[in-house]
Length: 364
Image (cartoon, rainbow, N blue to C red; front, side):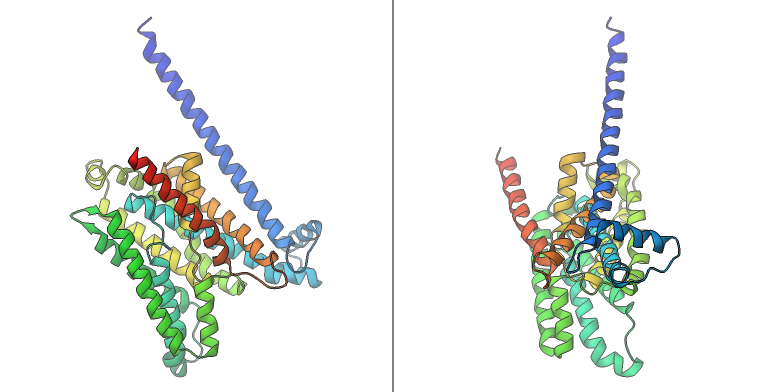
């Protein structure tokens, strides 16, 4: 009888593993279905309501190579579809960046917005707008749009590297130092952005206001084409970091002894976050709290395994920003709310709850 116990235990573990995989598959499938449905609703709803059947007809006609005509077709294909796709891309990039940063720093409070990475990217994009327009444009003509994602990427990369250098000593990352340094970097970036606002003219000032509040109001196929080649490969490459981030959760020394190339994993993670955040800020401005809310919700439902956490966070981020943008366009029609206001209204209470929950766990 005792000899059968190991076999019974092994069978039980295998059944639990199969049930866990089935549950993960069902949750991911349901999340994708929700994202698709929300995307279709976002295309149909707005200042000009369009019947769902007409939306599907226009999209099907465009997919088969036809050229739909009419005012509704122009609204769907020229305005709402690129906006919805851009919101999905940016949401996926920000949530994925948050999940990667939390794995890199081994702390669930890490987020590109909270630790100053987004502010650094926005500062660099703002400098590109104001200084580039003032000093480069007279020499080379109108600045190409591609220079904005590149400038924002450099700003996000510089902020990430600075933060990591300040917070890490002797191979260990101080979470308190990380958060305080992030606050300081964000404040410094805000002060420099304010100085740029002081130097800017009326047109540049409107552009800078866009960065500070966040919006997809300027979405277009041109912007989508500029950032999709950056964000899509990063989304595809992120799951390859999952094994390394799982090992880092045990500690850097332990990950090294497990055969992980720790420094290479860190470099890849920092580059991924800087590229994703820089490209996102360049087309949408600062949109906070997506990178902290979505990974936490995913962990509560699916656990902390990065093989599941990373793709699920990307889907969750795309869903969150698609829904938030829909609300931003419809709550105060015909006006439009900055999407950063909505995500902050959702994320700030969630962050406070997380801190209280964390303190309660430590005191227990």
